[in-house]
Image (cartoon, rainbow, N blue to C red; front, top):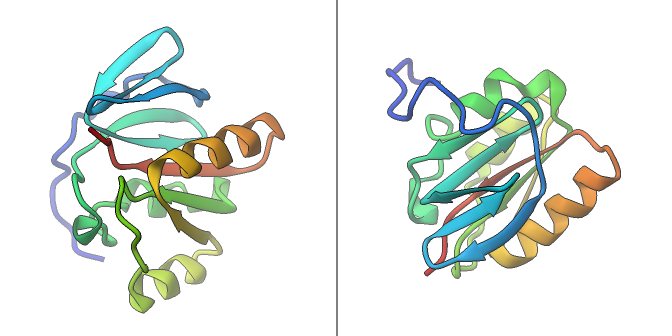
Length: 131
């Protein structure tokens, strides 16, 4: 994995996980907060995520997921309004750290993430904002 400086803030928006309460108009609502842009939801924090389209999803954009892999069983990727087939190399890299990748459009991804979070499963979500 490339060793580049992170482009997002070093401070999380929320220092814990939380269900996504609403989405659309380029952002998300969660934990009585709102965020414009994409989100990376990890078991210990919710972060801004610089990705705006599926083609930008790679090991670098998911560096926080790889770093937290020992606390994640499933990564749900919300691909905006696009249908996206993750590249084999990305799937294999995640499999090597024992994280299952499930990609779908952002709406279904949020619903799946919220259900799995409610079941106290070890889930993370990378969610591209939709208009």
